Image (tube, rainbow, N blue to C red; front, side, top):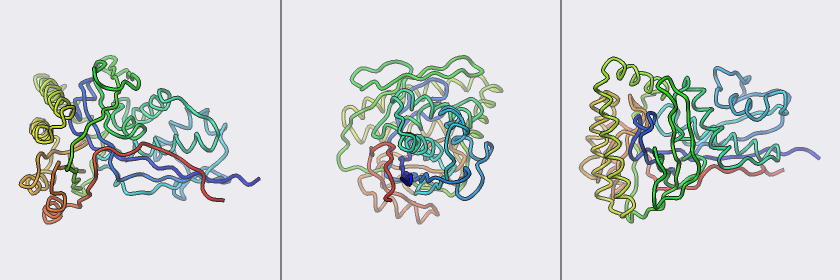
Length: 328
């Protein structure tokens, strides 16, 4: 019997509230978007990724997951082909989607299922390995679970608790509780604006850590973001789109004060604001993407495009990572 290949997809994400602060244990809310990473895994004579030899420095997420699966020697060699609609280093969780899709494809290919908790742990550790030991489980959890995902420093009432995560950092052990949230915001969309400026998450996270080390008083911003996130979470539960948008804009103002925005991001945010309920950067900042919550997605997308960005429209909450056999 000829072994078939596997096709997997996983969604990207936007963070509605809480980026950067979540790395330090504060809560955050993310949403799985329609734009997805795709991955095919087919039997081969050697491990390759998009035609190139597998290399730990170039493909850290894949190598990390392989190591936790038992190592390259315990797996038959495969050709890995990565594609889809998620631009890299743009704040949309492309690396987390890669990890989620690769993990699901390994499950299918090896006929070995892992628990939801174990999948979340392995994907999170792959992010942490790639980001030099500092990463929240926000992106990987959203890509694996889909929908709306809430990370918190405590178990939240009225939310579906999925699992807990912890990570040892230079500041001590950080712990998160991961939840799913069901929310209805009728008639609104997210419009994502991509600046086209690559801004790797690891570099942005490290730069903010250095800023806090030099200016400890600025860590107060973490508490401010947490308060905004909790207001935004309450608004989501209540189905109050206007209040959700207001919290998004508040969150962006704090992030901008920490120096993680950019001229390119601010140009797109300014363009989208008149037709939106709320606007902010999403992800690590420095470039990458912004997003707008809007009832008129076409007008908002046109404004972003006119300001030099690339616009993508998405609904709030899409299904998580999945894999299936390729047709023989």
